[in-house]
Image (cartoon, rainbow, N blue to C red; front, side, top):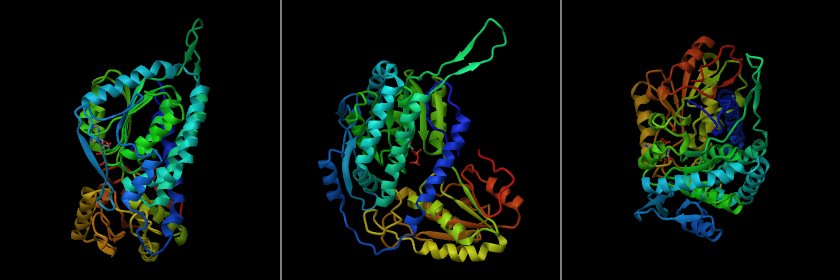
Length: 483
Ligand code: ADP
């Protein structure tokens, strides 16, 4: 898995940012531990309709695309429904946009670029700071939107607003620090200066699992250094993106600096890739789509930042503090019902502590409360859609057919729809799909190992990369490959 922050300047320090970004994500994942441990009775407290009505009256349920100053329908009038994954109810319809709408959005961003990039860094910084303040002032509402369209528990959704807004705050500050370099020349009559300039229009394509944070992490740095953007949020979760840009307009960020299209993802992607006006693509999502975008970007030689799939190992050594290891693994694995790119997807446990850990971890997982994200005490929401739950089911079936033990869960939850029981599997081996591919669901596979060398070899033996490895116990003195 690759992690990259979209900076949108001509010489971004990619390697440094990649590792610092990873650390930041891991640090955040631990903050959710205490939430996941909460236990309270299930009860639906809010309906899709009542939440939608409240958000509409707050002016934050935007249901059209944004091009320049205008909230617009698709040119051909097509729409698509957006569902609450918890109930299956339609929240509202949004435009199903295609290539022509995307070209309009690119033109809008292109036209806005000269004025935006000519503002001083301090002026852009002040506008970003206002946007951050508005996101924080509307934290509850944006959190409700996230729960409504993505399903994660409200507390966790509000946590995402803090996290997502923090990127805008951070890059509002960094806007003033885009320093250049002076490089020693090889000839005496030369001076070599590196000035960092905004590249122009960037395209940001984002997934559904962090409907706010994936957008702010991309457009925060881009806007800070003077780029303008076309955002394409996931069709499954467009409302948070639309609310966020509504607040950006309210903050005084000029129309055209941020534009939002959604609908026919391949058509939108093709239009973005084909345009010579789009200078950079930043994407978080599946490896398959990432590869397509990378190939598409080659035609116009765009800069590319990709954050793709992973299969992160979590390694527990015999001398680990059991309580810390259980809590840490729980928070890392089950945040967002296992639907994050840095979830601990393979839990490697050393022989001497394996049985104790398996028992204590299963007990802790059993306490997780599955339910609608608006219900009191729920810590595990639904999976995003049918395809997601079918994938989880097929991974578990494959593991069981090859000899895995179901220590807990292992089936759909009695709540139905896309709710899946928090699951712990034991006796996992490397021929099982779950140890090779990213499950993206609430399934914790335990793998036994004897030596540190074996743990490193297992950790790196996966198709999907291994990032954010979390060791508990003895320090690893050898590096895991960060693909
Ligand atoms: P996931 O499986 O996590 O949904 P995807 O890669 O399918 O990951 O989706 C991530 C984002 O990529 C979403 O916004 C989706 O609409 C978009 N997307 C999917 N297919 C394409 C494509 N061919 N071109 C551009 N964007 C795409």
